[in-house]
Amino acid sequence: MTVAGSLALLLTAACALAAPQEQRSHAELDVGAVSSSALVPRAPLGRELARRATDQAPRGYAPASVDCPEQRPVIRDGSSLSPEEREWLPRRRNQTVGPMRDLLRRIAIPGFDSERYLQAVETDPTALPNIGIAVSGGGYRAMLNGAGALAAWDIRSDGSTARGNLGGLLQSATYLSGLSGGGWLVGSLFTNNFTSVMDAIGSPNIWQFSDSILKEQALPFPLRPVLSYLYLSLARTGKKTDAPSPSDLVMCRKQAGIAIGRLCDKCDGKCPVCDSYVRPTTLVRICDECSFGNYQNKCVVCGGEGISDAFYCFECTRLEKDRDGCPKIINLGSSRTDLFYQKKTNRSTNY
Image (cartoon, rainbow, N blue to C red; front, side, top):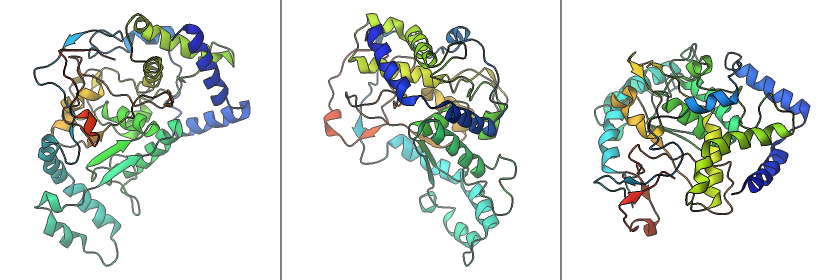
């Protein structure tokens, strides 16, 4: 995609997303009400670019050929759970018994003996209630509203276990998924070792609401969203223009993903669970986090649509590849039988 083409696309997006001044001010007040501590001055954009790269990327954002692992990625029949998930599931569900017991005892449903019920099923993980939480799509609105719900259901939030509240429902859940903007919420929490919403709000390095993906304070409106977005996306993905790509849409989706990724940066520091030093992580490294290894964490579900000309580039799912360059899809399933027998190759790229 040429610079002229990118500019035309972003001008259209800026016109569609631009709101009247009074509406923008109202939206900013709403965000400020969520967390004034999160809205702190940030470093200029140019200084942000270099430090956000992680060591998981094979060669930054430029495509590179790498050797595929001995066990080649395949897409299995998705009509049943994978063997790995079946092994993980009872161990995780056993961890939900305690929070579930406390929650049911506290809310005291009339005519329901929760203790008697749990005593009858707690020794059989397949009989335990299987709770799944899904955060809807809708950009920042979905992320912030979903964050409020998760905070209310999280036993780590102050006051969540008071009379009539539902703190502990999150700890009782086995699955947590998010769509689009809801995925920003779920992904940012999981890549930070499943930190609490309240801790994310209190950290200046996780939810960076002061860094809009469509504007930079030094630029006048309405050029601000266009030029800022072009600077960010083309600076980070410029090397892709010299490499083969399935379509210009892939380029657009990559740029949008990088822009959204500015929201959920993880700084180096102490792990809130085990107090050990942690490095910035990606979604494919969630299984290495200590909260996942001791089954305190939930199972993450990521999905995406196929690439088509009708796919809106700002609504993209960030599916990452492991540091060896091949996607971690060995355990994923699909109902599309045409995907089961893809031609095997010896090389892969980090598109």
